[in-house]
Structure formats: structure tokens, C-alpha cells
Length: 453
Image (tube, rainbow, N blue to C red):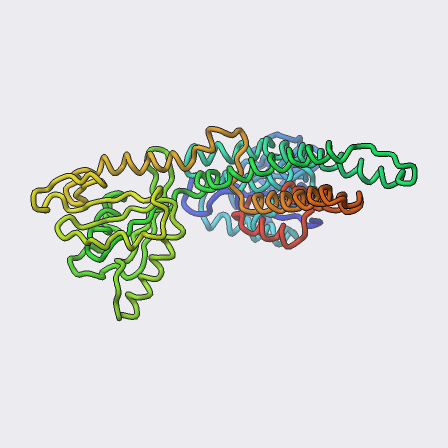
């Protein structure tokens, strides 16, 4: 935190510009070593005359040689992204220019930033709480409008505000109980156990309401896991390729062609899917195919939706055994090869299609999106949605501690025991916004960021 760091804030390569971000106490002194407003000769800028939120046109120098023409944007502490002195050098795109400027900064004492280090400094300097910092990473990787909106809601502090409000309630209850301990000899009750029990019950319900939104939030952020399953040679890979509009999976009449699952991202009607083509499920002695079947079954368990594909030309009466342990609500039965099936009749218990000719694929598309929209219904019924597993776990732990506090009240436990459980619940949700967080948690969060953010 005492060093001055830099990193590319844009992708380095063939591009219009490359932006290099610098942050730290020595930012402007280091800038003065390489930046000049004059192209005729190196005349270092005066760090004291650089105004915040101002862009300066000039040239980057190495000794007396021009490296590139550039625009430098200045942000003075504390009014910057990190809360420190920040400068952004916009140069012409290209890896060669970036390497030259990178070497100049390193020789001046600047060091390469670690993943997420700019945002980590913003957190430590009070520019955002931990939940907002995590929203930055979610915003960067958002692929749909829904995911973008969800990350923005968290970044603007709406979710943090709810957590702070719940934390404040816990602090108040804990304070009253601990204050009562000071007056225990006088027998003064600052809050009745009946009132405290009612308040804790309401808090537990509030925590549960938030945790219930996790499944919807996770799907919005990470996408719907959509697995295509069935016996060998029923046309799973053909359906997979049809949705992707490319021959991503090898299609063959030989059963067992797909030995391992394939996974590709897909966006349909504004919803992100993780489309999974699984190996055909059957009993086999082939070691490799057996492993593929095992992995397919794992993917089925992890899936949010399942397309159970059956060959209309050779329907298997035992096909349902492959999904017997899967909730029927997430299964869509698909009868493939309707174009070559005898009679080519529609089936009432599923959707008849041809992945080769496209017949019935519009119906399948509609059925998938209807089920997917049902999975994200929580986004419409709640103003706060959580999509982060860490947040959910903290809320669940808080619920557990509050339930313990409730049991202490019902069994006549003393104020010190009740207060201990409430304080533990408070500490747990404090981890969400970073009021209490250990180094391992912080490192785990910020190392998942991209370089330069």
C-alpha cells in the first residue's frame, strides 16, 4: 500500500490506444521523469502544476528520445478511483510502445500492480466497501443486461445499505442486552424477552428473504447451465451445433463419438446459457467412454435445465432412467429426428424436432426461455438480489447464530449468552461489507480480478 503501482487499464495489442494507470504517493513525481509537454526536447512537467481531473497533451520521453505522443489524465487524492494520486497515460496502441513505457516506469521505481490491486486500494481507502468492490468484478464480466443491472445495483450501494441497516439493528439489540448486564443487580430490563424474541424472528425472516434470492442471482450473473443429455446417437451434438450456429461438436452415426462433455456460452433473448453437450449415457466397458458418462452425470446434477433427447426413429422405453433423480421441473423432453421418423408425428409428452432441418426448433427455443425466465423470477419480485456465494454463506451463518439466540431466550439463557450469539451474527454479516475481514478472504476476492482493475 506504500508503493506506487501501474498496469494497463486496456488490453495491450493492436488497438487505437493503450491506457496505462498509475496510482500511489509518487505518481506525479514519476510522471515528471518521463512526460514533457514539449516535443522539441525533454522538459519535465511540474507535479505541483498538474490540476486534478484535467487531461494534458504531451510526449513520453526516454532520456532525450520521444517514445510516443500521449495524453495524461490527472486525478489528485482523495478524488480518484483508488483514493490516491492517480494518472492515466493514453498512448497509441501496440505492445511495443507499452513495453517501452512499462520499462521506463519500472526504472523510475514504479511496480506492476497485482490483480485487483487498484480496487483493493479503493476499498482500503474507504472509496467503496467490500460488497461494492466485488460488484466491480461482476460488472466487468457481465454478458447480459440483467447481469449488468444486478452488478450496478450492488455497485451503487443498494445492497450494502440493506446490510448496514440489518447490522445496525443487531448492534442496537446487542447494546441493550449488554447494558442490562451493568444493571443486573437492580433487576432492570431494558427490553423484554418477548419483544426481543419478536425482533429476532423478524430479523431471521429478513435474512432468509435475502438468501432466497441467491439462486436467481447466481443464474443471472453466471448463466443458466443447460445440459443436453440422452443415449448415444440420439442427436445431442446436432442440437448443440444448431444453437451455436456452428459445427462445434463432432457429429457421427457412430455411437459414443462424444467421449467428454463440451461447454459453450450462448445468449438467447437476453439470457445467458452455458450450453453443455454431454457424452451419451449407456453401460460400457470402454474406460474412456465410462469416464465420459460419469462426467455427464455430474453435469446433469449441476444443471439448471436439462434437455432429455430421445431418438424418434428408435425410442428407448428406459430413457427416463437417465433423469430419474433430476427434478422433473427442470427437464424438457425432446424427440429428435422427426424428419425421418415413421409417420413423423408430434408427441404430446414432449417437443418433436429435427436438429438437421430445424423443424420444431422454434418451439424448443421458446420452451427453454420460458423455463429460464421462471428461474430468474426472483429478480422481478425483490429489489435486492444476491449473486455472490460468499454473501449467501455469511447470511446463512447469521441466521444460524440468530436461531441460537432465539433458543437461548426460549430456554431462559442469560443475557451474556444471548448477546454472544447476536454479536456473532453481527460479525458474520459485517464480513459482507468488509467491516470484519481477514487477509485470506481479501486475497481470495481480489486475485480473481483482472490486471488493471
